[in-house]
Length: 499
Image 1 (cartoon, rainbow, N blue to C red):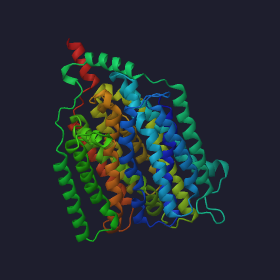
Image 2: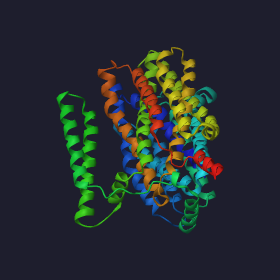
Image 3: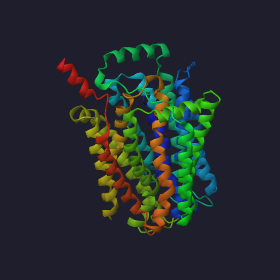
Image 4: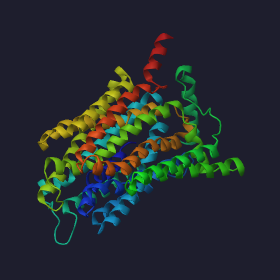
């Protein structure tokens, strides 16, 4: 059931470890790299709730979620083959947009898939198994450029008129093939439960719940779309004026435009719902967004700061390590490419450690609770990310990567294990898509402001963006204790023993 994530993470790992390198190789200025990454979070913001809503309402020969696994895999594999052959920077940025949209089509239903297929007491293990396959796939994908060079003598510098080194190109070719084959394995070997079976399972599970940990249902009234929309449009305009006043770079306007666009969508939804008395996917998604269960709202804040840290790491680790530790910004030099290859190894280390820790997480959660486990993991990750600044020996960077790997394993499993117990089963896909808003919104914020901060606050020293990310992750750890885990298995055990 989770094996497809092995291939999906090949796509994400190759993207995370090598796209900034490709952008730099195609002459992107260091402070412009975040804006080039904006495609990834914007695509996720748009695609994931739509795919989640559609998959909730799909049932065909391939089932409910599997048609989306397969469609996304075919598109993403094609984009992975093309990405390292991008002739210009703008084509590379456009290919990233297509690639990320395709990966999201495959990935988003996988989260709901586990919620569909497993009862409450097995979901922590189910999401931990996803973390294992994510970590394993990412290890191999992140190490590919290094392995191809050091084991198979594939060149690490561009040949002839080419801009991208052969070892990077072949890594993407291999990754695209594995992506498709892994997802095909899940599509072919896994049987989904029918809507009728799921309804029976959910009814039986509901009867077993006590009042202390029933899922939170939609209790809020239909939101006042017009009022909410006007508030967000005003906030977007006010932020735009502030951006203009301080003469910030153009990319900072992305955040203000996003706020205003959300407000406009709310007004459009209001017209459909309140004036025309009609409903559609947009109205449903925005209504569900405003009626999120309390647990989901609390987890959203934790996710915001966790993923801001991760995006800072993915954007700036290559630039930070090559300039701060290897002492070069020359993307055509052997020294730069040696440093960039080592970043791939480091990413492989944290993903490999995450794959190992994934098996430990259910044990820790059973002993200490899911919230405590997640908080400890985030502290380890935050300290690890911030401490990269303290190391001058590239080999010693493996140490902070272990902390980041611990956090990464938990980020991929614990929030989802906590979340699924608070969601209405019939809206699992929609709410999983909405939950990903709080992954992509901090990424959009990072893409909007990190370049500005690196240039004006950090004197073009990318390493300080990693320190900022570490602080953000530690803040997320503190916010975990604010979350109400309404479906905590430890509560169920307590009530069973008490009764």
